Image 1 (cartoon, rainbow, N blue to C red):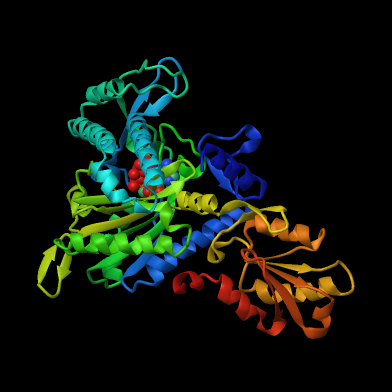
Image 2 (image 1 turned 90 degrees about the vertical axis):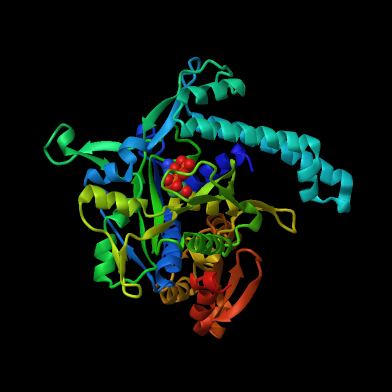
Length: 510
Ligand code: ATP
């Protein structure tokens, strides 16, 4: 899918009440979005899927909900005040602002695109005999292009490690990167830009009352490490999970809900014994990719991307990337953060943040393995893989959102075939039985075919039709969104039937 694909998603999301631009009557606010009546249901379901997998299904993980405002020293200790920066560059002709690292990444993505084209061409030429791995490791053109990519990555890493922003600018110039708007290479110097939003607490003005809107939820977990460990009598290894808002003054925030200035994160910090990082890193990589793949959004849409430039505190880090309409981009990060965070908070707070190991009778600062996923990005992943235009057997087309049943915002629609003969009353009886368990809609307007289309467009898995026979046989017709097959189900068995198909549990048992 392309940018055009993203446009379709944005307009569909708005038309059906998933996502609206924020304060739209005032022409919107850049990089802020509101979730509508269906969007908030979908978002809640994604949260619940994550919370169930992380907190409920793991005896040794608990969840918290910490404040957005934190003591300002938190951000000194975490390194955000000094180093939560992005390298910024402006094009002097278009006056457009870019992240220097993103310009370089996009340049690399273009070369990767060329490699993929080489591979596709060769696959066509060689047919069944084609060995992609061999081609990639021996074809001179592919090797040259890969060499270019490695060279760029190495130069960029060296420049950033040395905090040499001049070298980053030189790299952009040497690569001949042009501004997508003006087409020119007339760049300013690269500068660092801190992404934290600052505000004031109470009536105090000036720096003494300065607080920040948290740029990540993780620090709320670190500062509560000891509270949770002691009050919950937690033994290592154990995890603390949290879902909440985070704020970043992103230099450029486009691509819809992919990059926002106010967004939501689902983070889990897993506290472990020092020395066991490698083991837990691979455990969580596996657990998290399994969670994603259980949604069946397409195995080919995920890949791991190892970080080449590790943050100073990390000893391993990777992203799970998803094939968004704009290409493969970060959806979730998995980071082995060593004992950096707790040690920093020990130092800045002057409080011991240790674990007393009853087995070894030692006391130490635990290491941390973190999984961090953007809820809004997850939402976009679901939406972008779900939205389809399908041509049916009779040649007609339908717009359908193939949202995983367990996540769908509306699980079923109850539809009386016509608006008289006691069918609406019977339908409302059926509705009342289902409502306690699931989010269900009632719709009696328009012909049944049009009602099916409306439900397809919002991704409702089941349409339940009440017809004249229902009054006699106490059964309804249940239509499946994906197969469009219809089955007759006795009303007495309807709850169980619906539950089996659409409950969140189905995502864990598939
Ligand atoms: P990026 O490189 O895309 O800026 P990041 O590496 O800074 O992301 P992390 O700090 O690892 O991101 O944050 C964890 C997760 O939070 C990301 O994987 C992403 O899903 C989400 N996230 C980060 N920034 C944003 C944002 N501005 N808008 C929406 N989601 C975000």
